[in-house]
Length: 256
Image (tube, rainbow, N blue to C red; front, side, top):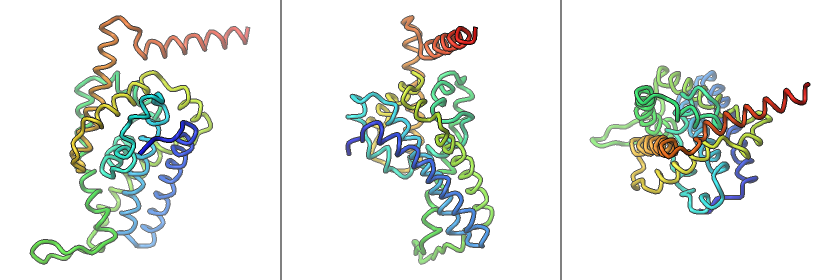
């Protein structure tokens, strides 16, 4: 699958963010109406759609030459990866275009703790999402029905969906096009790291495999930035700080 042009990807990013919020709203309506199983499934899909918005952000900001060889199918169609990305977005304290600078500066211990909580909820959501819609006959004749999803499971998933959709909702702000068309240099590096990690990934489609891709992506980002620092090349953070300083100076000049 070939990636679309930048303007199309930008519109797709915003549409995915809006759809994540719509899915969350529908899940909340169903939950209030007593349809816990269907509400759970829609809440899980809201997290996935937020994760897809994150992939579309990376596709939008990456250079065209890199985009031409990016594994677009994996980025947009791998459900477990989108689920893990959505959970990741829910936990990040910044909106999406500013995530990469934060990741590059996070101490290793805090980063490991941050990533350690992604696998289990992704595995749970991947399983219960289907259980909220279908009856399954398991080994030994066990029958699983949507009605078995508990209130606690629903409330937990709604909370995660609310966090993920809220973060994705920042992409609906008017300044988003400018942010994505002129992203921080760290965000471009993150898109390179994502392509590299996904290209090296196995064909497993489990939540664990998806989490491993995320860990490799972040590790590659940090390694790339560390190499630049070691070579004395101005890092993306430095360049961004200089750009902000220049912008502030221009503003003071215009106000004078």
